[in-house]
Image 1: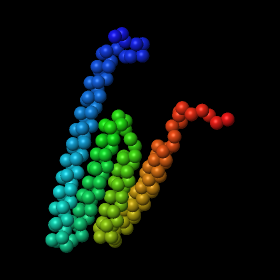
Image 2: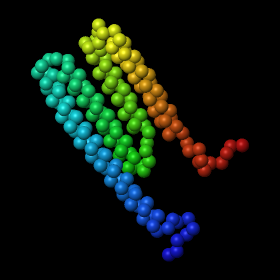
Image 3: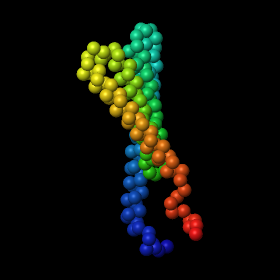
Image 4: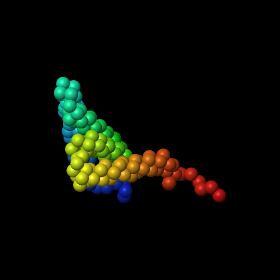
Length: 166
């Protein structure tokens, strides 16, 4: 069986297969780390919730919420790795959603801490409120990007094999 002009040489095909194997190994390793991290954070959230229920203080409940939102971020990144392995390309939407979750997490944490930690400390309170505002804008920008990306993905292929209308 002779190689055609379009087929790469055997050493290039072998090198490509080796790189694909290494790439898959790295992605699977990342997936295992993300899954383990999500499990650890879930256990931490349960511990924080139990401690918060026993102590009755808002600090442990904030830590519980923080851990839960981190679990969502880890799971979204795990989904991104899974889709990357499946489709053999990086898909932007899961990363946009993870970014939105990170911003929301920080907004919630800052909003809960601001009244207790920053009231009476003018510049620090103002900085925290500016940060909340910027994070809110970032949530809107990332959300708009996700909507545009989703809309673009639903459009028919530009190079479809359809005849142009006259």
